[in-house]
Image 1 (spheres, helix red, strand yellow):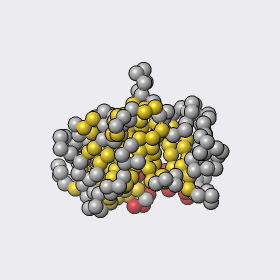
Image 2: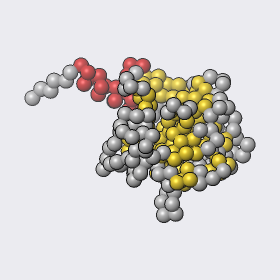
Image 3: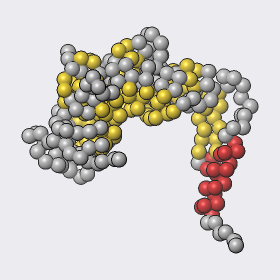
Image 4: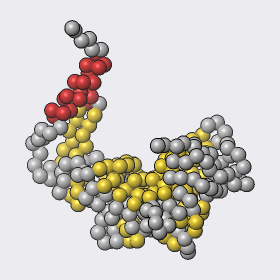
Length: 265
């Protein structure tokens, strides 16, 4: 019996086998040498210096702190080879760098979301996930990196986001969106409070204060994006929920706060 493979199928299998053979092969670079191994035939590049993050990369984002755009990787890891980098690291195009502040570097837990937002002091990288501190600063699951230092998102009511006593808070998604009253950072995930105010799994940060959104009995929010469907830009929200309560200022679907309702089991 003969087996006939299409050219595309053959190339796909060939690329997989090629990567499987070549990835473990030493590049000849010594400890600390910078290198980037390219597999252009299959349209993949391996970005590496000192090796790759030792555990899991959960999220990627590009951010320019004024020195040029760099790639930031967040997740669950402690080292990039011999480089210590707690759960977030920067790739400059030629080397990995830790995000070092006044005391230490990185964050003390999992990074799940990255987003760029200008709070009035210039664009900054906002980092969300499940962690308490960033470089020794208490931040409660969301923090700001301005290119040289870490800071918290605090107002008079409290810092960051938190859950009720029996629950574990997570920030899963970040998005910058202007609802007509100015650009805000929207923060979503699994939590009960933003600052010290009640906010069920989604809230906004304007650079100085937290605000709850009309969400009702909504479950975990896992993703957000801004999209213009021809009627103006709206914030679309997806996650583990059936319904979302709309406020008097947003009386029906199609107004400035739109939802994508989904149930993932």
